Length: 188
Image 1: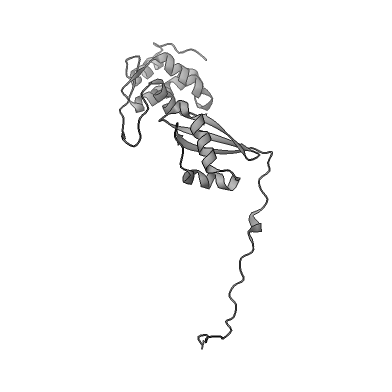
Image 2: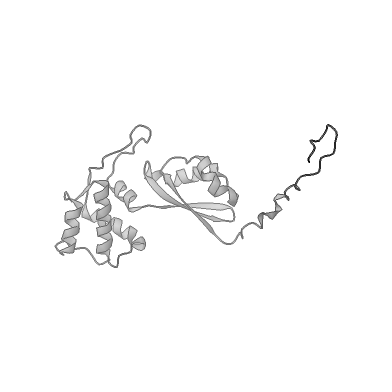
């Protein structure tokens, strides 16, 4: 039977205290670049609380990186873009990796939306086929298609999902015209 300890009685010690935080291991090698990919809204400072879990272990200041991201995404004001941070020797360089949707929305030249006031915007604009081909050339390294025409069809699918028209036509009609070879798409 166990007795409750009286005042002043010796209590057997519990488990030993945890060892100091020296078990974290060595810091990452400084000559190997590390990459962090995240989504950010162009031209806005991302909250430090969302950046901290990704950047804290690398020894970077989330507030400073948030300001760097804001400076580099000013061209994409109001659009959600993917940002790739390359970290080398505790110095981060910010690179914008735009998605095809962000490129199409930028080509529509709509005024930047205020995210707090305006929620779901209809993108009923019109872009030219030449703009679609230029976007396809930018997206070509990340496309899975063998030819540029396949990448153009991917971008036309993005135009369809956004809701804009291309050369005043529905994007699906242009995709069918590319399949029927009535619309010429350059090889590269």
